[in-house]
Picture 1 (tube, rainbow, N blue to C red):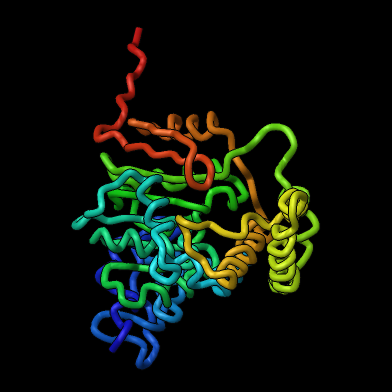
Picture 2 (cartoon, rainbow, N blue to C red):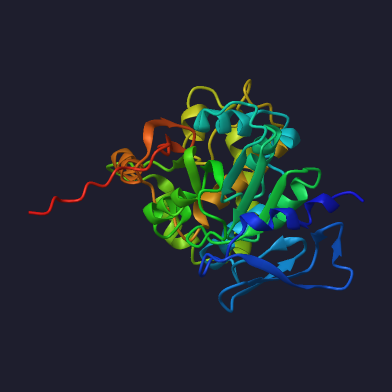
Length: 350
C-alpha cells in the first residue's frame, strides 16, 4: 500500500530516547488496526525509567503537546507545502543551497543524518537522495507537510519535537544539519548547542542563520511589530489581497518611459523576474512573494546573528575544521566533532 513505509518503523526505536530523562522508549499501546509489518500508525511510546508517555499520531511520534512559538511556521508550511520543492518548482534551488551550506558528498549510503527543523521537507528530500537514513523533526505541525512530501521515501523517520529537548540517543548521527531554523528559536545559541551531543565523534554539523547588519534595520523589522499582532491566517489573507495587485502595478509602472523604473522600485515586493536562473510564471512568482512576506513577518522570533558570535559557538562546542562564510540565508557554518575527546589535565598534588 503506498506510503505504509512511512509509518513509525519499530526498527528505528533504538535511536529514540526519552527527552525528559534520556532513557529508552518502548511501545506501550497500539491502536486496533494501527500497526502493520512492524510499523505503527497510531499508538503510544512510554519511557522505561520515568512516567513520560508520547503519542504516535498519523504515523509520527509526537514529543511536544503544541507548536509553541512555531505555530505560525506550521501554518505557513501547511499552506505552502509544495512551493519550495525543487521537483515541483522545476529548479535546483534547494539542492544548490543544501550542498553549498553542507559541503557534503552526494552519496552518504550507510550514514545516519539528523535534520533539525524540517519545515515542509524541502531539504529532507535532498538528504534522502544521498542514500542516508534521515531522522527529521520540527517543533511545528509542518511535519504533516513533510510527511506528505516524502511519502515515497524508504529511509526517513519524521517526528515532532523541540530542538531544546531532542528525543534521540546521543552520538547517534554521522551528520547533522539545521537550515532556516536557528534565527526563529527563542535562544539561538542554546538551540545550536543542543544539537552537538547527538553528533558522533568524527561527525559533521552544518547550519545557517540570518546575519545581523549594523545601522538601519531592514524594512521587515519595522513591519514585524505590527504584523505579529495578527494571526498568521489573517496576515496571509492581507498579503493575498495586497501583493498580487502591487505586482501588477509594479509591472505597469516599469513600462512608463524615463521615470517608470525608479517609481516601480519604491514598491517593496522584490523583482518581477528571476530569469534566467529561476523561470517562474507571474502567478508562481506572486505565490513566492506571498510566502516570502509571510515568512518574514509572521514568526514569533527573528534573531539575526553576528558572524563572530557564530564562530564562537562552534569553537565553544569543541568543533574542528570550522568554516564560516556568507552565502544562502546569511551566515553558513560547518564544523567537525573531533574523533578523540579533549584531554582533561588534572592539577598535580603537592
